[in-house]
Length: 108
Image 1: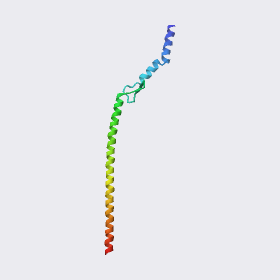
Image 2: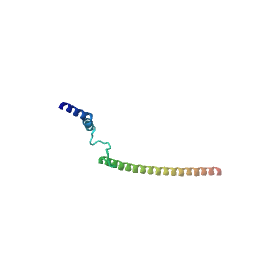
Image 3: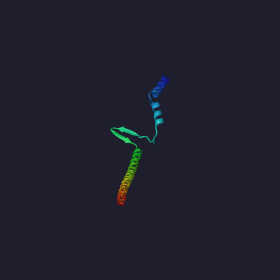
Image 4: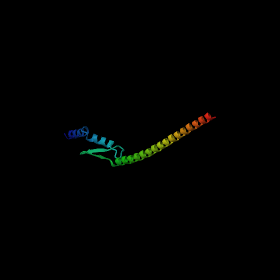
């Protein structure tokens, strides 16, 4: 009878998920993985501090990169405006020279 109880206890432990679940939990446990760890407890979400710090650092980096890109875009716009103005001035000079040439030819 004692051997039967032990066998039944062992079967209950194995099939009930106690030992198997423990082994699976230990096999999947990675204490410092880079995976976002969230726990919901009474309408509160807890996120690992290192992940929050990484996200804050990434946000700062992206803001700096965004500011640099905006500066580059503004500089490129200024160059384009300057180039367009120079082209307009050159075209105006060419037209004035063409008119001067026509006037000189007409006077000769």
